[in-house]
Length: 448
Image (tube, rainbow, N blue to C red; front, side):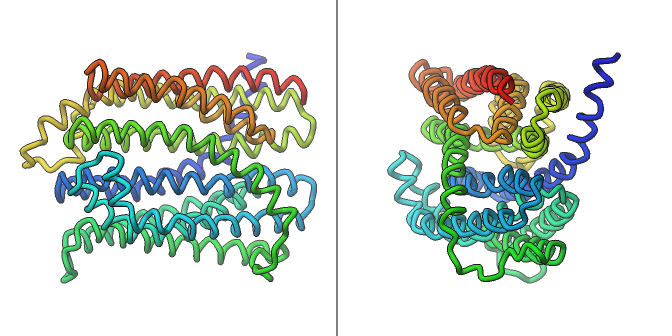
């Protein structure tokens, strides 16, 4: 009882900070979920193209978002020390690096069709994906700067606004999808292009709303004052931490993108089922991601105070919260696979039965990796709060690309297990990462 009483304040503090972040993550993923759901109702081939498009867009978004995520622990530390100048410097340079990354990635979106064909994807699906990405690529710039502002406000523990803005964005996206994909209210029927326009518009609206809120609430920070002036020292600080975070994240997300490519080699139906199952798993992962972001802020502050016991108790509390939710997700995946998968496919689609069968089997595998997925994302976020990014990068690369990716290919293609074999590789990669990160935290926490 005494030990439980010691952990409860940390659990409550993580929930107070993390629940709005969880809500905003769920609202954010509702945009891609709505795209997947509505495109599944529209056309299965367009759905397969959307899966490829979303994977490439997310891969590049997360690659560049390392700079935004570096802002969070740096702002938290500076705010704890009362250094408003450093808060402004790192946030501004985070935005600089994000804008530059968006401009660098534009040609990739424009020529995504040939790139996907070179990766062995169906020519027709690749051409459809390019149609989507040429529009969605424009939204990369506001999407990245939104992530910077999100990290800035999270580090200052102003998370309620994130929930409301992301929720409003999700509602607007659904409405625009309904109008533009299907051609309702007199609008032209744009299909895949309509989904891209809707998502891009929401990214721009979210940026303007968050920027206005940040300037109104913290005028002394002067986030956009003399924005054009470089700060090379702060730029270097954000870049050094940001690229390590980015490569770590890409190592994991790249594994999931690699499995999408393998599914595309196996077949269009398998790719569509994979996209649906992964979208459902992503929804539950957003809860873990929100909790992990709260863990980053609280670990950073504990380190700043030199509070080793508080760091340990807080880490155990947030891990317990994450694993507890993982149990709930497992139960849902195992007891209602047809309901979850079936909601993404038109009841009259002739391929519905095959997609349900494959998708249901994949959800069983998704249930298996709930625990390890929760453990690894919270573990890596706590370490990030301690400004430890180099060793987690090494753990991620070894786990995901030394173990997960080869296992997915060998089981899925070489040994002919198919879609389920691909997902077994995911489970193995996540498991090794979770164990490695837990060991790293135990070693590092002894030095605080």
